[in-house]
Figure 1 (spheres, rainbow, N blue to C red):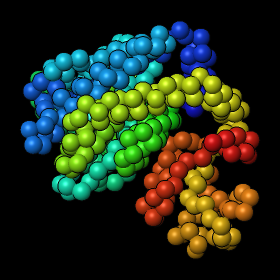
Figure 2 (cartoon, helix red, strand yellow):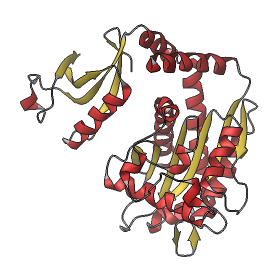
Figure 3 (cartoon, rainbow, N blue to C red):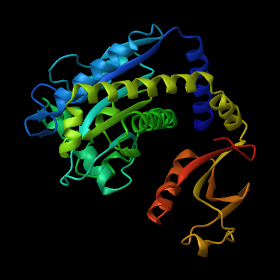
Length: 341
């Protein structure tokens, strides 16, 4: 019954979006004030991301379709809960948080975008942990973030239903950011990932956190600190936001899914591989995973693992498939037996 109401909610949300005059976006420049973020060679993350955010907002505000709200427009400290509160109060359609990355390895480079979810691996967990440590700069953080233990991945398992409902839309937005950054900046695409960022958990709308590049990498640091680099990144993100809006407005697939789910005609599988080889769909060929479905597409074959009607259960199967070595596996939606995405 809960799943039924979720899809009905999504159906009417999309209908409302089609009728609204503006698309509300909250732009969040990470860190600020007493929280510098990552610091390398006297270059502060808080300064770079603020410049990028202001450039994004400047471009979006040229289009009357978009209404922009900022969590900060200058160098000030904004608590994580307050960033979420700003977005929720604005009834935003999308929350975009911009950051810079860092790594012990000076060779690490490229951009990656995060949506809220369980840490798929230790690297994702460490990225989120580093960003979440800002709570220790906040007054009364023990009371405000009761239940959060930034040192424990298990602390983020209990994600609320509302955030789970926005996962697919968040992923769609993040995918467009990564594609646009890779195409327009010619820098490495590190993909869309999931992790337990507190700032995302505080919001009740599609939300993503963009790590624009590594300050620990000298070449990338110089790029991030340059006016040309910041403009290129900002323009790429604007392009992605507009692409996401068009997808959300024009794609009727989610409405179809709402009806299908209500009728019990929607289910999910995990696509684990595509190959030109015609392999028998048996567990021994797929590291013990079962059941396996094979689908012929032209001269190639798609291989799927599992079948679930519950999104949470299929997400658990996805994590299992990735642990088995199918790192590029992803969830596919089926409606009345036909692939929908």
